[in-house]
Amino acid sequence: MMIKKTQQASQGNEYWRGTEYAFINHKKCESFPCHATDDPDNFNCLFCYCPLYALGDACGGCFQYTEGGIKDCTGCTIPHDKDNYGYITERFNEIVELTKWVKANKPSK
Image (cartoon, rainbow, N blue to C red):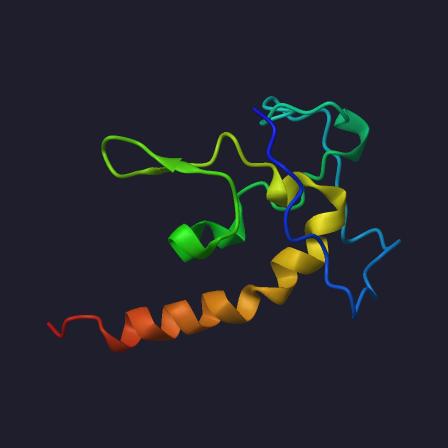
């Protein structure tokens, strides 16, 4: 199942476009491609494990929860779309804020 293209790279600051660090295609990986794709040459492996996973329902991807409550992202290709580097990196501040909240709300021992 392919997801619709959602919330692609930022409209403003696209300094990363055309850079080598924003795209890795690792066709020798034993799991390549880890998601269904019609375009394996443009499949970005940089975010092999999606940093937005921690944002839960707010990640912006196409996911579902298993009966056991685990987030299942097999239907999502947001981190693997070559044009989504900016979208993901722009959301790092949300992940930082989440970790601050977790730390502040961690029960004391």
